[in-house]
Image (cartoon, rainbow, N blue to C red; front, side, top):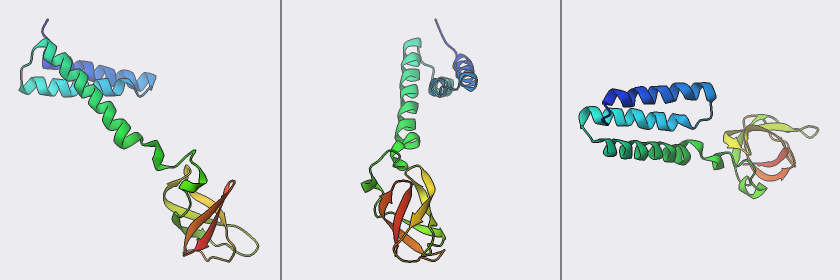
Length: 145
């Protein structure tokens, strides 16, 4: 059995199209691996076994890239202990007054969100930078930097 380059391209496009309908985020990597295999076979004629091996390696490589660089669940610190949040700094978007809580904005999500309600021991004006010193349930305690 001999597979041509366009067989791989058709398989890749078919798997990517099927991914759109079932949305498991699983077939996409095999589809991209098939497209890569098709491109390589256009430039370098390979036997059937080499094509299957290349497809397997390309698909596994796509999954590895996804898990390493794009999925990275630790970027938000979701589900982490409060020690992972202490010391992070952000910008006050609403001031902390003596009678109410303010709001802080982080450059990247902290515990799954980039905006958090905050309290402080002393008033902090909007536009000032603040550092997280404690987590009080759904509110962060901050101090002005």
